[in-house]
Length: 255
Ligand code: NI
Image (cartoon, rainbow, N blue to C red):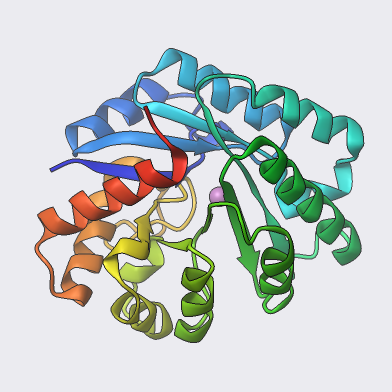
């Protein structure tokens, strides 16, 4: 079985000490590729360095809503420059976060819209973070990203919202939260959308799936997420692996 972790932060300092072992464990557990996601200029550069070092890593570059207060045109120009690297497969993560308002909402919107415009100009897919920010995220996606490809990462909205995104041809990415007993809404989302619209991700080092909840997350735990999706959709695990890998390759245009 081969899986792709569509969203992880191996560029996070949490992995500085044992990255070699983390990569090895992920490969041993069937994770064929990891997409390492940038959240500011520095982490985007680090994602690219990892992609250069490891065949199994691809990178995205972008500015997370929490970091948007520190970003302006100079940082966005740096992000644009970084997309020239052959292993950069997308822009992000970008979006809106009204749960932690670490950056003013107007600033979050400005940096989000500018990254969507950049993705459109460069014809790259976007990785979108949205936390407690519906329907603003949807309104902005509808206006600025309707003709580009993208994914709603760590999706935490309702089934109705998920369907609106899939109508825009956006993928819905399912995180380790799907393994939590209380994740009723997320389970409804998985059940209610089609497997052709689903990606899986760890978002490591965050959102560790059951039974490792409370520990640092890592891509080798991705099979727990694939397994939870398979059970909810009543599909063989192999089929979930095949579809989600195909969807991820299609989104990011892996060679
Ligand atoms: Ni993330």
